[in-house]
Image (cartoon, rainbow, N blue to C red; front, side, top):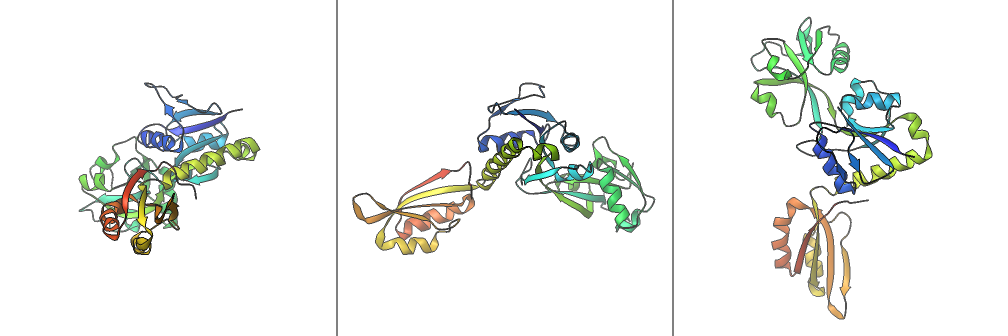
Length: 290
């Protein structure tokens, strides 16, 4: 038995492959192949556009897939959400689906969009959002380069933004945020009802979430004189409590181990040294499983 898994091809592909590698799965794609190899004989990976994955999962062509919450909503896909995985192509934070207009536009609110022209890949989401505000507008599908169409071609756009830099570069301002989106591991309801496939997906989700939990965290090990342990513990943060063990054949020292945010290391290591810690070792993490 195999689990047919759809993964996004394109802008999110490399970030997805990296996440799977940290989770312990090695995926390799050659050239323009849509069927990459994975070192798990129970999984068959198919690469396709993120826009299409929820629809194929909903229809049962795929057992499960990884795509954005935005595309699940746009496709009105009937799927089971297995896990939210907060990562993106440039950062580990949600992307936003925004309504944007030109900086000098006289459109200042959603109500000003009545009878205006809006370009977007998210036609259904945009229409539902406008309808919720009692607004009727001409929403047309955009095949790409959406930002450049304002104001010469359309009055407004609805598009995804991760950092906002592209909007600023095209002299656009955000009028409203329609939704925030993160990748979701989602399953076909019939596949989820099969015990083997559900267990496989739950194990996969556990490892992927563990890999994300380890992102930007490191482990620290150190030796500390017992007389200075309390002083060290006062300045040392931990996910829960540090692991403290006596050193073999040396009752005056303990070994201490902790997981912390990587950005704090440069401040903590000098402070730990001053507090009496020695033999400090920093090491990377692949997964953190609560």
